[in-house]
Each structure stands twice: as C-alpha cells, then as structure tokens.
Length: 485
Image (tube, rainbow, N blue to C red; front, side):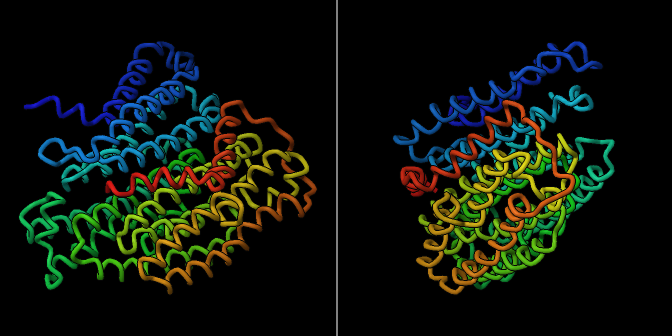
C-alpha cells in the first residue's frame, strides 16, 4: 500500500491530530473527573482548533493553486481547491461555536463533560470532511454516519433535560429513516450501474431508466433531511428547541452547509444526465421550503423554534445555487453559506448568552432588550438584517448573487418566487427588532456582561456581516475556486 496517499488528506489529518490531542488531554491530563478541574477548563481546545485552522489553510489551500485535483485510494477520496475552501468555512463556523460554548461549558453541571463536547463536535466535523471529499458512495456514507451519530449525542448532551432527550430521540429516528432511504437509493444505483464511483456512474445513468430516477428521488430525500428541506423538515423545530443552544447553532449551519455542498457535487458528478429531472424536483422543494418556513416562522414565539423555521427558509435559498449545476451557482452557494454562517451564529450567540444569564427563550422576553443590553441588541440587529437581505449588509449581496445565478441558469420564475418570499421574511425578522427597540416590558431582561470568548465570537460575526458584502474580494475568492468542483 502506498502510504504517501495520506499526504493528500491534509485537511483530515490536521483535524484528526487535533482530536487525538484533545482526547489525550481529556483522558490523561484531567485526573479529577468528579470536580471537573483539569486542563480542559482552560482555553486549550480553542487554541488548538485555531492552530488547526491555520495549518489547514496554509498547507491545504495554498498548494491547491498548482494541484487543482488530487485523488487517493483509487479515487475514493478526492481533493479539489473548492473542497478545501468549504472545509475552511465550516472550520471557521466550528471555531465560533466553540467560542460561544465556553461560558455554557463552564457551568457546574457541564464542566466534567467539556472534553466530550469538543470531541463529539470535531468528530462530526471530520465526518463532514469525508462527505465533502468522497468520490465513492461508501466513503460518502461513512462520512455521513460519522457526522450523524455524534450529533445525536450532542443534541442529548444535557441528559437530565427531558426536552433535550426528546429532541435527540426525534433526531436519531428521523436520521435512521433518512439514511435508510438514501442507502436504498444507493443500492438501486449500484444495481443499475455496477459501480459506486462517482466518475464512473455518470456514463451509466440513463434518462429512460426509471429505477435510476427512483434512486435520484431517494438520494435527494435522504440529503433533504440533513439540509432541513420541506417536506423533510418536521424534525427541525423540535430538535432545535430541545437541544442546547450551542448545539442548535452548530446543527443549523455547519451540518446544513456540508450537506448542501455534497448535494451539489453529487448531482453534478453522478446525476448529470438527469439534470432536467433533478432541476424540476428541486424547483418545487425550494418553493415549498421557502414558503412553508415563512408561514410558520411568523407564528412562533419561542425564539429557537423561530430560528428553526428561519433555517428551513435559508436552506431553500442555499439550494437555489444547485439549480442548473453551474460554476456560478457553486460560487453563489459557498458565498451564501459563509454569509449565512456568520449571521446565523451571531444571532445564536446572543440567544445562548441571554439564555444562560436569564433563562428566557421567548421572543416576547426580548421586549425592551435594547434598554438593558444595547450592544447585544445592535449586533443582533445587524445579523437579523443580514439574514433578511437588507442592504448594505452581506446577506443582501449573498441573496443577490444567488438570484443572479438562478436567473442565468434559466429559472426566472423560481427567482421571482424567492424574491417575493424574501420580502415576506422581512416581516418576521423585524418582529424581533421591534421587540428589542420599540416594545416595552415591566420585567425586561436584566443587564449582563457576556464572557470574553463570546465577545470574540460576536466580533467575528459582526465583522463578517458588515464587510463580507462590501469587500468584493470575498466573493472573488470563492469564485476563483469554483472551477474545481
């Protein structure tokens, strides 16, 4: 066996190194497990993840200029510059989640489980890495399960909380069902193509083969669960509400972004001959996702359930970049993912720190929030305006480029419907802004000060929301790698 092939897996190896170091630190350097006092009560995991980010970008992205595509293990693993860029975006999001989780993990009931939280989170991230670089359906499914199973443990992390346990049960049961659908679709593909390699399947896909059309529908159904697309979204609101807020934030962005990218790559590489069929299928899924989510978001009072339906709507916009399978669509989708990541995590960071200090999670609890916590209200407003697509924030530009890609791909009706829904979404995002700035409360949330790590995370999100749209170099960076699907 040629072990030099492992050198092509720079991203995965760097992340595995971090996981091993954290595991050893948690196992050996934390002798007092009962009190929770040990090395993992320091910011060591955050420092290590930051070092891994730098390592991945310098050794992963830079050589990609001269080595556009690399394969390993007979083509089961594939590396392209765009794949590395997507992994870097997910890694930045994970770093922000770790920043916002620091205060929550330092609570007495969670101190002893800090190591487990970091290890489970990074394990899911590693699974997403394998999904993204898969060139074979076995590699893809291994990555999918590696990302899904630890996620269930994260959702049930607060095991004494009944809502958390219920959310984990709903998540794992729905995940099993969706995995079964996806596996059945893969088995149909294998039966008709006699191979599981992405590159070999495209030549054996036929528009007249109804078994392969069924496989396409099953595959989209399986990944539709991960992305929270309608009608595969029913688990989302309950899971988001019951899971710890930091886990919810991770689930709403990181997992969704990886699955959306994999959907794009697989449809283009494997199901290219069926492009008219999956364009039609996604056309209706996107319309349903955006419209249904907008209708139900208006009716929510729990802010985590509200963000769940917001995430479903945003997933519809994210998948809009898949339509037509164009390079411009890929650029728009990855750029949209980055902008959505910083905006959504910014909102969840404020929800998390507010919940930790006051225990309040209802939208009505935020009445008069600006009077007691003006800085947090301002940052939350920036992030909500970005999610709504209000200029000059980055969310406006991300939606603009997404609509432009959809229009040039030949779907003006879909773009028009998405644009109308964007106007509708302004209403429910502004409901929170109205609560913070206009409404008054007899018992507003008391003034509090967030910890320094949460402040760092919020600063990253605020900078991203403001400058990712104004600086054209951000979009140009993603566009430079869009050729390397």
